[in-house]
Image (cartoon, rainbow, N blue to C red; front, side, top):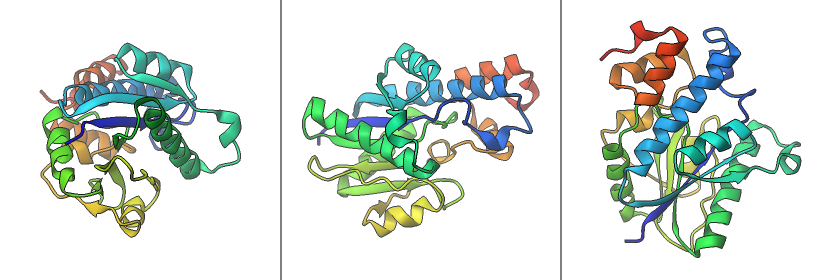
Length: 224
C-alpha cells in the first residue's frame, strides 16, 4: 500500500478559534492554535505510513511554526480566496495543498487532517490510516458526529474532494466517502470550544498544548 501524504489547512491567526474569544485573550488564542498545530504535526510525523505533511496557510507565524516542526509549507493565495466564505476558503486551501503535493510527488494517497487535535496520538492516526486501506475515499467523524476530523484517499488517481465545514460528515458521506469506525478519541477531538478543550485535557494533551496552557495560566485544567 502506498504511503500517505498529509495536508493540513490553518487559518490566519487573527481569525482562528473565535469561539474561544470569551475564554482566552487574542495573544493567548494565537499561542494555543500554534501549540495544537505543533502537537498535531508531532503525532502525524510519528506515523510510519505518513510520508510527508504539508501545511497550507496565509499566516507567517503558522508557516514558521510548521516549518520548525518539520512540515512542508505552502502559502495560501489570499487574493484568490478573498471572495470565499470560511468553509469555501478552507476547502479551496485543502484542494490547493492536495494538487501541489501531487504535482510535486506524482499520484499519491492523501490525508486531509484537522490542525487542532491536541490529544491526537500516532497510534490512533496510524490505525485510521490502516483502516482506510479498504476504501478509495473515507473519513473519520468528529466527536460530535457531525464534523470531519480526517479525510483519506487511498487511491492515487482519486480526487480528495474536501467538503469541510458545518455538517461536513453528512456531505463527505454524500460524496461517496466511507465512514471509518474505531476507538480514536484523540483523533476525533478537534478543539473549537472550551468544552472541547476540557475533553481533550481529560484524554491527555500533547506537550506543546500543555506547555502553552501552563504559560497562559490554565494548569489546573491540564491533568497529568
